[in-house]
Amino acid sequence: MNSSKTVDSQHVLALARDVINIELDGVKKVRDELGEPFVALVKKCLDILHDGGKLVLCGVGKSGHISKKLAATLASTGARSVFMHPVEAMHGDLGVVSPQDLLLAVSYSGETDELLRVLPAVKRMGVPIVAITGKADSRLGGFSDMVVPMPVEREACPFNLAPTTTTTALLALGDALAMVLLDCQDFQISDYAKNHPAGAIGRTITLTVRDCMRTGDHCAQVHPGATVREALLAMTAARDGAVAITGEDGLLLGIFTDGDFRRAMTSDDNVLQAPIESVMTRNPVSINQKQMAVEILKLVEHRKIDDVAAVDDDGRFVGMVDIQDLPKFKVM
Image 1 (cartoon, rainbow, N blue to C red):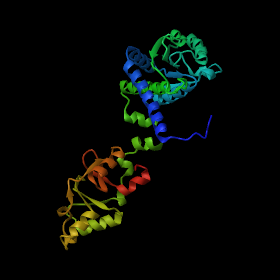
Image 2: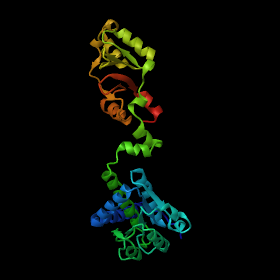
Image 3: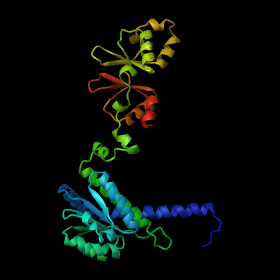
Image 4: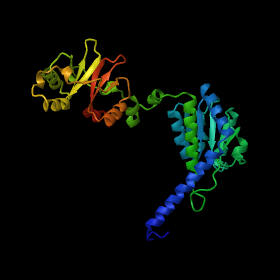
């Protein structure tokens, strides 16, 4: 191999685009060939999951790597699933399979010896086997109870050997299965949150407005009869840039910010003695405390505001969200 070969930028980019185009064509081919075998697979998976079983993905080599990823995607989106390496299965890991499960055996050629060796043991347990393969007439196809074809014309590898297009197509097909099962099982974002309690995803789907808003002494609030001066003192005491104006029933009537004060000062030197209701922003932007925290970002970006009043289901003021607080919650 000549490592000193001059790199031609145009050639590199053209070759990279060719690879991606070949893989795109492969995925489109699999998409266009979807039919009743895929529908039958979905139905079988739903039956297995409904009866308390799980989906066991099994593959070796590059197909094994993709299968492991797909098992994780399925498990996180409501379909109980695990990955079983066929070689390890022959040395004890077969114990993860139970009679009520479904085995998804993945091999593009359908002739992978390591995978084929484990199938008789699975068959003896009464576990149904679904082959996901590009060769329906392979040994794997013949041994399985159901075959889901995955036709791909060629790999992106110039020798048509390295699994490239086939693994990309398998990933897309597996993701399609996961998302269809998600829909069929009416899997909700609240269910997704239970499976993703940590990290960026966890924060996105578990953190609510209630978790981010300021309350109590850190939240300024006055009645409409208060003066602007009293409202400013409340804001100063709370170290907040806005004050909520609420009625006797707690309903949010308006909001007044330090920016509003600066603008009011330019037109009225005596604004400090004015009633707050005369200068407040009526019917201000608000957000329900139960909503996801990420919804705050949509509001502040769309409305160009720094403070958002949080309310309960009845429209009563419960807290104030200051955009400056969001970074510490890692919402932005």
